Structure formats: C-alpha cells, structure tokens
Length: 267
Image (cartoon, one colour):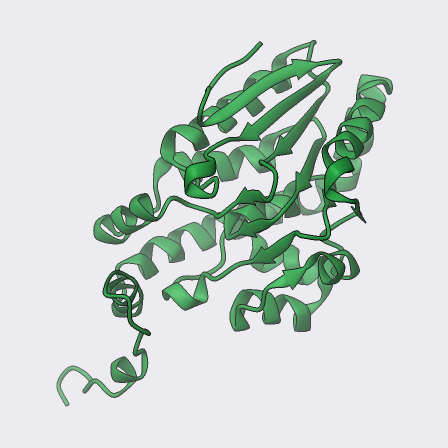
C-alpha cells in the first residue's frame, strides 16, 4: 500500500507501517497535507490488524527541517497554530502501537519534539537536533517542556529549548533522546529490524507493556500539550514573534532589545 506520493509516503510491510517524509526540495519541511497524512496513517494503523508498529523515516541527509516556513508565517498572521499540526501532536500521544524513528541529518523543531513520543529512536552520526522556538518569540510544543526535562534533566533541556543549542548525535544519545547511533548506510535497515522484531512479538502483551510504561504520564502530557498549544498561539501574535518573522523576511538579525525599550502603556 502506498499513499501520499511526493509528501509523506506510507507503506506497510511485515507488520511495520512506514511513514516516510519526502519533500527533499524543501528539506522535508512539513505542510498541512503532510501532517494530515501522518495523522490519518497513525489512526488507521492503530485500528489495522496488518500494522503492529509505526516507523518514521526521512530521506538521506535530512529527517525534517520542521514546519513549512510559508505556513508558519500564515500562522503568525492568523495568531493560531494550524489545526493539522494540533491533530498530529495529539495523535502522537493517542497512538497505542509502538513508534520507531530513524534520523539522518537535520531534525528541527517538531522534527526533534516528535521523537520524544517515539519508543525507539536511531540516529546517524550526521543527525542534528534543534528546537529554535524561542528565537522565533515562541514557546516549546508537543509537550517538550515536560518530556525533555524528564528525559535529560533541566540543564540540558534549558540548553536546547531556551538557549537554542543544536545537539549532535553523540550528545542526543547521552541525553537519552536517541537509543543508538548507527552509520548512515545502515540506519534504515537497523530501525526496520527493530520495528520488525517488535512486530513479531505478541501484540496484546506488547500493547499492555507499552501502556504500563506510558500511562503514569499520559494525562500530564496531554495537559501540558494543551497549555503549550494555547500559549504558542498567543505568542504567534506577540510583538516578539512579529519581529522575529519580519527580521527573517528582511534578512536581518532580529532586534528584541527594542521591544524591551518600548514605553509601557500609559507611561
């Protein structure tokens, strides 16, 4: 079965549903239809007896550059995070079958935060992880403000989410984002092998084991994701976000200091 040619390619073989992000001319940046394809694939796969595991893949040298810039600018104009993004984020939490990912090259924004919801993540030495939300005047999403400190501790989570540092594969492995670092030429085969091993296990026992591992935090994850989403939408309409996006379009450094110097209302 193949679907979403040219955007997200979905294929199921040996119980593994592969969701391949395929937009190489735009560094695999995600659009509304691409989010929708992934959301629908996760939902359909969860109800299908043919699917035991979901596997996220990018292309050689690029996982995803995150949200499509044009759509992101539209979000800034509307002051709301797109419904397709919100639906995908919720699907990451609601999916009941294991999720595996293989990351080669850049994983920016949601390309990193979605990995926090995966059960197994493999990366090549060329993988680079970054969440530049704050530099855009925004806040973290996908419950990353909760999951990242739990995974790596406050100091490194602050370094990634607030300072905006890029983590290479080695640091991501040390921080607990990545299960193993695998040479690029064998990365997808390694991830597929792990996915097939999961798919071969007793399905009900696997589902219950995964539920037990995740249930203590699920309600908290949903609550944090909703809080982040509301604040994210609020921040999209903020002067800081508008300055960040204007600076990008005008190809200049943003000047957030001028906003701090602005007189307060009534002053």
